[in-house]
Amino acid sequence: MENWTNAKFCDVANLVLGVILLLSPWLFGFDTGKITVNAMITGVVIAALAIAALAAFAVWEEWLNLVVGLWALVSPWVLGFQGTNAMTVHVVIGAAVAILAVIELWMMSQIPPRLTTGR
Image (cartoon, rainbow, N blue to C red; front, side, top):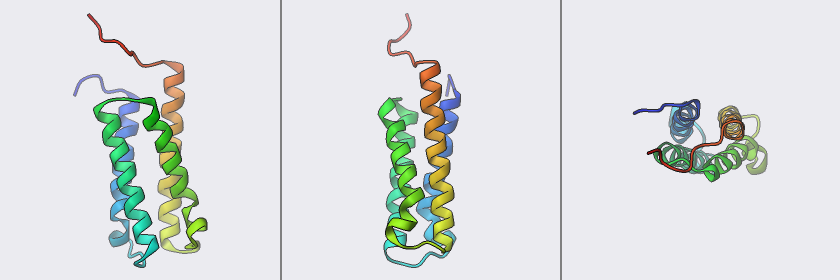
């Protein structure tokens, strides 16, 4: 791939984080039920947004990443699984995804992406 930017590295990191969250019920032995379903759905959404961002950049993807990252961060309290190994995984991955989204949004505000193709 050509033209690798810091934003693309953030997207690759989000892809890895999404896959880890998707697989975390088996990697870390979560209880079945809402914790596993939340990890799987949230992980798939994070990974899908990362793939979409790598394929074709759009600002809305970063805003959705921020929202999904914040959901992963607060979901242990909303769904009631605080104090578990699953909570640690959700909080760490959620915080990382949200921070990466904020970094990408900040980078875009500093150097707006080109919307037209070069000659």
